[in-house]
Length: 114
Image (cartoon, rainbow, N blue to C red; front, side):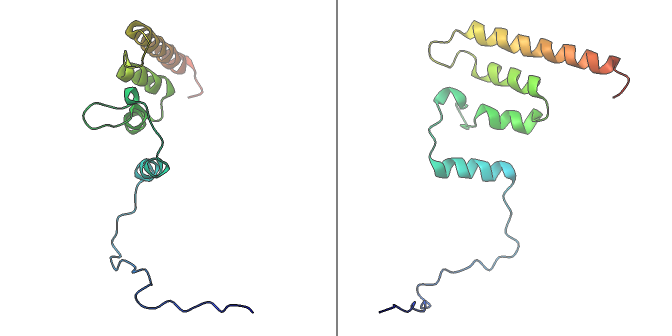
């Protein structure tokens, strides 16, 4: 015997919001919500102490289009927070990436094609 689907009663139907002006989440908000839904455990050294923003979220917001500055900021924000990692190593990596970016910017100025 084939069962017929039952009609949903008014009490079982999901109510749709009537607000047509609902804010569409930004890409950043959607990614943040998706991460929370997946319940990924992010180590504390990746998060700020007050607002709990992850370093990559701040970097994406401020300099998402520049790899070297973004990486330098990440090392600087997390400097000395990772277990068994000396703060000096993170500071040296920060300086390295800033030097890479300085060199890249100088090369861009010398190039006539940009």
